[in-house]
Image 1 (cartoon, rainbow, N blue to C red):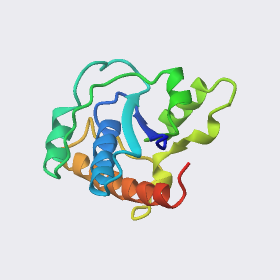
Image 2: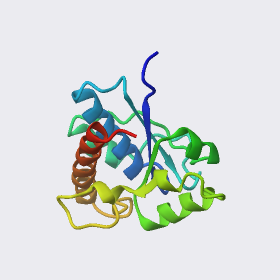
Image 3: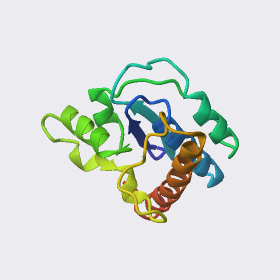
Length: 161
């Protein structure tokens, strides 16, 4: 019998900038490491305002410039995601609090963590939302995500769930 995949869910507010970029960056790192058969990535938002839409064009452009292919469509996190994902990583404190609220009986609390707990090269506690800023904000977010995803992958290969 084959090993079950480690399932990672990245969460931001609208699921059109930060979390789909994290999904694409992590998926790229997983593929480069030859671990696609062991690790699966997805993303979701805490609101459903953009459900069904592709990622923000500015983020897709910035990600494409780094070789990432953002193909996901926005969706809202569901309570069932708490059960089916092994790691649920939130982009900021508001997202963290929203996801924690879904965990009514606290059964999945250990799975829910701030993504920035994996960011080591930058002194940040939140991944900033680039939506209302300039284009350089999208590149900055990708810098943070690349660092965090690299550290997350290293952690998963050393200490799998």
